[in-house]
Length: 67
Image 1 (cartoon, helix red, strand yellow):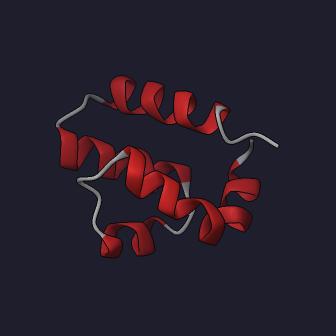
Image 2 (image 1 turned 90 degrees about the vertical axis):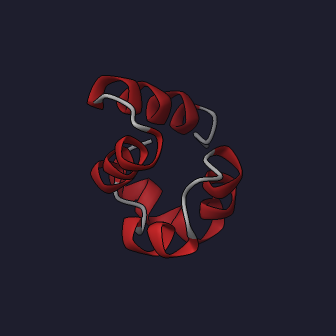
Image 3 (image 1 turned 30 degrees about the vertical axis):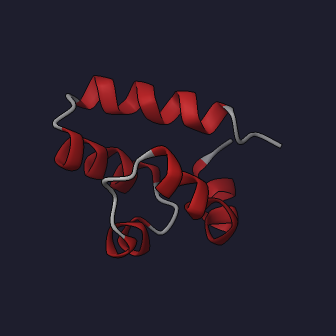
């Protein structure tokens, strides 16, 4: 799923992102607004992941939400 699709579906899937990454706040999710780079950055910030780890988590999650 490319970034435009995620952004378009963000209102539908942000609850699932919250379930996946419980340390993300509602404000974080509003700031992310479906943008991959912002989500990866927040995963690094909240979970202490390296950029590669955060990217890998994102890709695993994103692949489970492809339509």
